[in-house]
Length: 62
Image (cartoon, rainbow, N blue to C red; front, side):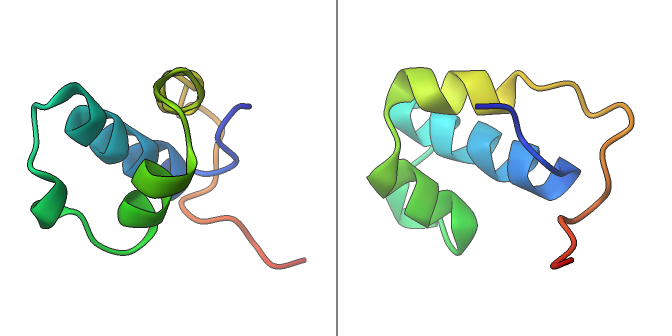
């Protein structure tokens, strides 16, 4: 599942770092904490590896 925005891609990368043990789970907050708890490592890898080119900074509600 590719990221829909730069912010979503960044949050997935932070959650993935915590899953790998590079970052402490206690340091997570907001969307990255939710992603850590609800997504598998492979799902996070897919989302974090999405190219940022052409993505909006944040997903619009439209």
